[in-house]
Length: 253
Ligand SMILES: [Zn+2]
Ligand SMILES: [Zn+2]
Image 1 (tube, rainbow, N blue to C red):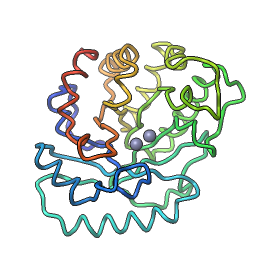
Image 2: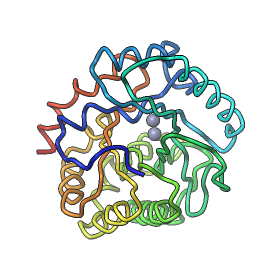
Image 3: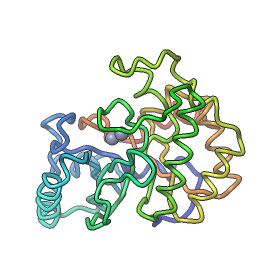
């Protein structure tokens, strides 16, 4: 589902940050307590935030515990900031999702499809850039049609692949996104619009793919898909979305 009125105005969109990791994500700093995240968002004038801790197949039970702790904590915090307690879930491949029975209650369901560096992630048979591009299309099409995604995290990019020593794919960063035709991007974004699945403007990842992100943004505007903004914050100093917005405008607009 969507969480705000449709707009492509980045100054309005940057009042949200829908991709923040709390200290329950092992990779986030210990300072990322819910209380301090909300206070920081408030000080920076944000209107809506989402807590999106990682979930892997092996940590689904553990995640249920941290989720209920966060929900309890959220009840005790008074703030004008709207706080969504969600998750960054894993779509490992076609019909291969966290919580296959969809039995988890989240305020916000952000799905990562391209964490290929994680050892449990499914790799395509064809490990060329085109093979990965096709795998992304198949997995995202299946995920969006399953109606379990409010938003796709850091869509289309291949940084996790090309940075991985374990995978050693042998092609350069940006090879996979550049394989997508405008029609292929358009079809996925149109499907997103039909299923109320937004695509993330991930202010962290986008800086590495300025050209591609401009294409995605322009095609998205044409087909009427929604974009949500997130910084993938793992520390308090990255919660304020607005600090990245001028840089983002420079390559998007
Ligand atoms: Zn991620
Ligand atoms: Zn993340």
